[in-house]
Length: 570
View 1 (tube, rainbow, N blue to C red):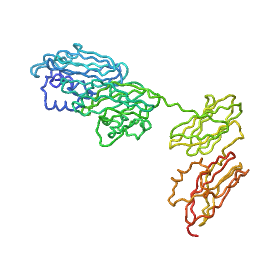
View 2: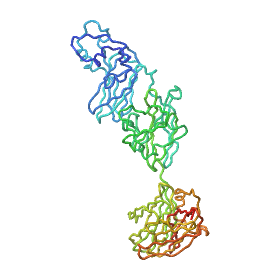
View 3: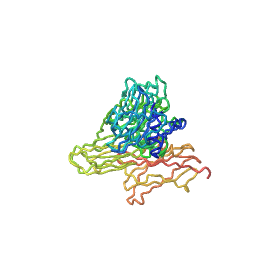
View 4: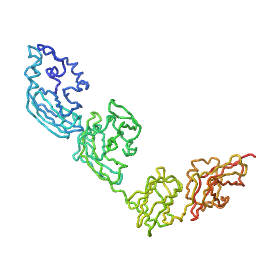
């Protein structure tokens, strides 16, 4: 066995040094077995226990040495070293134990300091050495008895690493076994999605041990161990537990893991803990470039919400949930498809163009005046929520603004210039708008609007059959039409909001809903207010009022709708 039957090694490593004439005591077997079972007993110690993985830390250019004992010749032996975030140099060697080491602690042994010096100063026989960042193994079916020492060194930086050693490798099998083909296959590739498939671990399919798979996605490189991934992430790793059966989900669908932080620094990592809830945990410093998702025991998964035309690296790790130990599949990489090229809409001088944009989408328009021009005017009428407009002239950005309602932008012209207009929709929903581009400054299709397009109702002038309202105008003479529609008493603001398409004109209304049309303007902008009393209404009824302003080109813009109610008793 490893270590467990060597009283001399315990004295060297676990007991304080005292008098040079101290005798070797016999071992309290019950106490020793209890200490072996307690993993904290080996924390930061030079002892490697038999059949347990230890985690430790190396300072740069500071070697570390570990010991274990094989008591009998022809003993199977396996040693696994896992570098985490830096390459390691490590060497395994063996030397014969002093004769006193096999005694029962009787007689007059050499002083303890001399025994320690005798064991540790001898070079021993080198069995294996390695330099790199791969998970590397030393395996022997027949190893000699002796004191084994493992020397490790990191020359690049301070780093974490893991070590596992056992004298019963055939029965232990703590690491999940890889299938005969350990590659990850990319079965489907889209602009924002990649579907991965892999063969199940025989540890799960044949030995029926609990295995779950963890996928790691990043844009830099493949990882050779889960230890390396966890070293890259902070101690409170950002990851998710297994999704519900039949449901794939994306590690990118929450603003780069931007859900509520749960700072459990110093607590036991919850990476392999089972949970009755579909839980998420997140790092206090989430890494947007590295994501880990544990998906249970299924062997196909679709990663979504990726960026188009971007190369991603994918790694898969089989994790034995009984031992918390993992094995890496052969990683792969893939580049998502390019974004579909947007069709560019050509704008004609002085002609209004209707544009529809999907939620979070964008549209591109091009305006190429046929004649030389000193100025160019862009008029935009956003029908619903605000949209963003960007205008570039021959590649140079001239304008970038959000537009709500009607806005007009006048830019300096340039001979033979070409203008590219990018319209970006709202995050709330689909966007509709009208746009006009012209080099003729007097051609304005959209009517001018005041800053405030609300309709005000006068409560004191309300009767059982009429309501009085007012709205603002401008210095430009325009035609105003007012319409009314009876609505239910439970008509609310949410319903009104859904009907706020400002681009729908009076031609979409019933003739019976029309109240009147009139022309109005005022040179004094402070006095550009008009009032109107709407008569012939029913007592105690609710009405939705709309005011449309119609420009010289025939295009109309609707003011904000107003919900009013007549008095029930007069």
